[in-house]
Amino acid sequence: MDNSKDKAKRILHIYTKLLNGGVIYKAEEARNFDVNERTIQRDLDDIRNFMDSQVESTGIVNNVVYDRMKKGYCLEQIYQLKFTNPEILAICKILLDSRAFTKREMSDMLGKLISCCVPKENQKLVTDLIRNEEYHYIEPRHKTVFIDKMWDIGQAIHSCKFVEIQYQGIQGTSVKTRKIKPLAIMFSDYYFYLVAFIEDKKVQQNFSVVDDSFPTIYRIDRIQGYKVLDENYHIPYASRFEEGEFRKRIQFMFGGKLRKIRFKYYGYSVEAVLDRLPTAKIENEEKHEDGMRTVYTISAEVFGDGIDMWLRSQGNNIEILTEREA
Image (cartoon, rainbow, N blue to C red; front, side, top):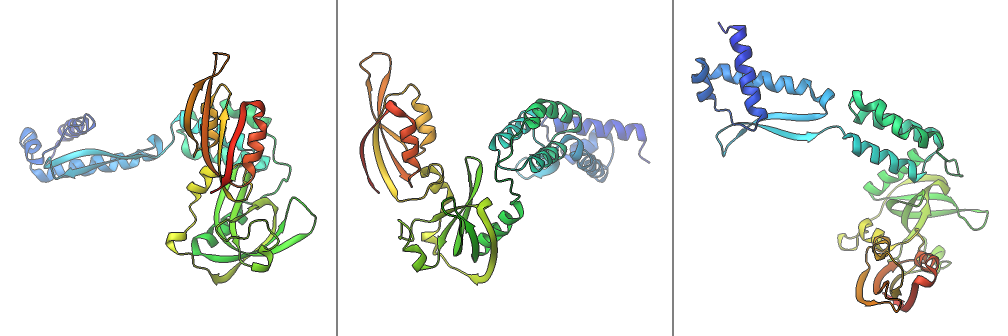
């Protein structure tokens, strides 16, 4: 019969060896402790069970696996389940700065994030670090709760289903009904947006952009009503909408045509320009006449009219050289 002290010593030895990156060979450990290999296997199973029980408190999922190359058992950290303190603090700060949700929604989300993703002993610390900013949080003026609506539209995108929306635009007071092909949900500057193609060709003629290759953009909080239709659309894989490529080119979620611009930048932080325009490329660098700055010649591919707002905001730091449709 296995003595309890011997078993404890044996399991601690195996556990420590695994934690230190060692390899457990059942035959070798069986000889070292004068037991059979089935006993070592039971020890490994006990260690697995112990690690499973610690997941909730540590947030780390570990497992003992057989390595065929090493022909023995090793410890494998599958993933870290919970965020670290710095990670959750950064996420909370970004969420607060987004100002995308009502005050109640924001408080609920922050509470759930901290409760579910931070080890219990650190929750008060993280809460204290965001308390003041949460207290002074300013909710968006539309004060609309739209998360369920956004989820339903997201499911329609996944299923490639048409959606009929009643939309209240910024200009004009009348609510317009549109049948659309929803393509993507995106976030920018305080608001969530739906990117979609308008299905009705007659409606398209009232827009400055008629070509189907340029989608229309809707603020989700301005969608007054919606209905997911029992009708599917098909977009060939080669023509699929790619949010990442779209995101790199659009500014302030203003629609329009694809354009190529080329300009000189006289400011002090070219990094700010390159971060604002992910497609930007520096073509040339030269010393400014004041001898203090570098003048950069930059080209970029952009989508829509939002770029004009950004260019104007830069004042004398920007000199537009050329501009054309891509």
